Picture 1 (cartoon, rainbow, N blue to C red):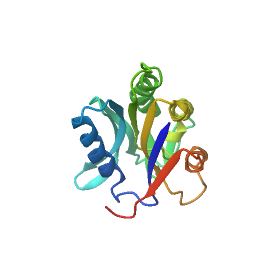
Picture 2 (picture 1 turned 90 degrees about the horizontal axis):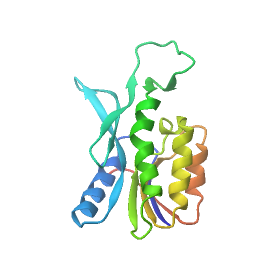
Picture 3 (picture 1 turned 135 degrees about the horizontal axis):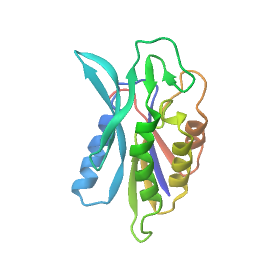
Length: 172
């Protein structure tokens, strides 16, 4: 498979914007493409969370700011954000399964934006990404963070693959 990842140590430098522009160009060329990207949600000028948006137009919450500092056992948190794992998996997993089990006759492009801390709370997502990366007919275009703290296992696994080309972006 052919795999390209855009990487940056900061949010807001344009990884998703770059992915969206490439996606639009590929779609308008008639190339079969599916996947998802994450989009900031803002209210009154401040970021309140992130949504998952599939290339087929479905949208749902990935995370929202929580004013409650106490964590319940079933809650997945990254900083001030509480991750909505159910919403994320309902949107992303069927799409990845479809990419992985589609007709092998056509090469497909799969957009995965991003493989970060929030998304990696999902074990099913980790499995689906690994399966997508090993699919010989799938070209993957994705984004990964440069870890600030403890490295993320799947991100480092992707970074060290011989069939992966990582483009580091500082500001677009």
